[in-house]
Image (cartoon, rainbow over all chains, first blue to last red):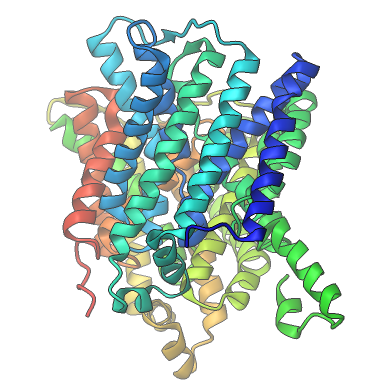
Length: 321
Length: 288
């Protein structure tokens, strides 16, 4: 159980090499390309953390912006009094706790309740934070002044990405990961096999929420000025969903294949046609549903399978539009 | 008293949106998250008809509701029907329809942003005060409430006292069994989806007479309508109306007594209570 297989070892080496290569980016450029790389790293972490939960359960979580904002706010509130690493830990706990509360309220029921609940969650937290701030403190915005440069943020995100991948891999090997695979295939079977379905889902959602909370905290120094509308931007939730599904959710690294092209494309569109971003996101959603139901990874798998075995795709496979 | 009247007017509008959604989700089995955009589109169309052609919003409904019916029928026929056909089970259809209607939501939003920009719109229509029990209310709000009541009543009469209405309710209960008793399920589903869109659009036309609207506010309405649908029980007309009025009054109470910025907290508080104690809705039967 504890020994690495040759394949796992190979994946680990390739992954570490890729991370090390990525870590050199800030040395080559500290302008536009670094900022683009930060965005890619940011969404890579967010999408992978999202997939940890939504991949096996098929629940579409739109709570990303809420966890992210909570992380950002933790840093905004505590940057003058507490050390940064402690703030990251608090952000993780806060994100995990909120995820736990949401999970306990909705994950016993069907997926629709969960989607609806998370749809407005960022807006709800934003309203509460704004209300608390206007009534109990004297300013709505918070300044975050640190010595961190864009390169530091990038390296922290890379470290976080490594942590998310290792966690995802450990979950897959654990009893929880095994339980999740059974739940994903057939929930009734899982329940009869003695798995506490709701509990497993809540734990997984908390792990995912904690990582998204940390990501928000890491990004706080980049914003410099934190206020509710920018910290709890609901668009983040949708972008994470679309990128993760575009890449695919069947494997840990699959979202990356959606993150890289989408982030670059989104960057170009918002730079040249700022009024067309909603339209672009809409079209991307449609593309995922009608053209790429299993993401880029699914498409590649189909191609490899048909070519590898030398047989044409079966009717069932072709029927997938 | 003030809270009750204002809350009832707001709840009346919510009721229509939620009725539209409950038809689409309860009968056609499509969780339409673009329904709020449908509402906003109707707001803009009413505004446009009123300001360029001086068409009264009340008359505007007669144009907008059939147009929305046609638009939603097309959406169902060409975007949703393929999903229904390829889905292996209810869960997959739910995920697919949620994602596809998210796409529609952003596309509608994007088109409206390009056409009208991101600004806030409002216009004056029947903005004369009417005195009820010592307090003043805008005539446009009262007209809205009356129109909402008429539309809801007509919908209820249609669903419970006509032959086709009964067929639609049969599809809501069980699409397979409905097919066995010679109901054209695809046609009834498309009809219910389109009718839901028309009812929501009518709500949008009325809402625009007293509410300041902009191109990106649809999501919040969709969310509130979804919460109402769940509170009332999916596919339940009486439950949706009652839940909408409850929500309208609760929101107005929080906005007046605590803080106008906390209306969503009121919505969520109600939602959580329902989720914890009656997930099948106010009038829903508990699952066997």
